[in-house]
Length: 87
Image 1 (tube, rainbow, N blue to C red):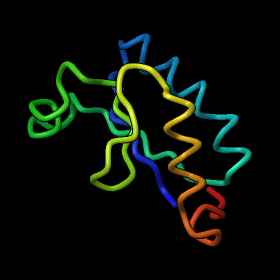
Image 2 (tube, rainbow, N blue to C red):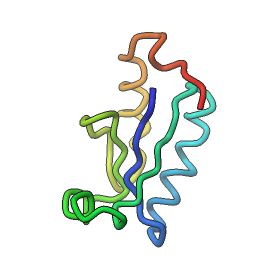
Image 3 (cartoon, rainbow, N blue to C red):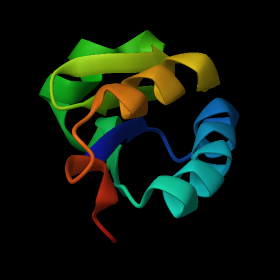
């Protein structure tokens, strides 16, 4: 499984969310795809003031701060094999 973190390099909240995601990534084995919204005008318009935004496909898990309860619920709801990729 791959989660996407929409991110800005100069954003302290973005760096904080990425750091807080790392232990979850190690425990659950998902891939984190970090996407710089400023590199794509469409993404910049879509996520502008919401970054950081953590998504699974088109499903928003959380924005601004890592919502550990929502992330845990999301991971628990996945089929066992889907949450076990290494990356």
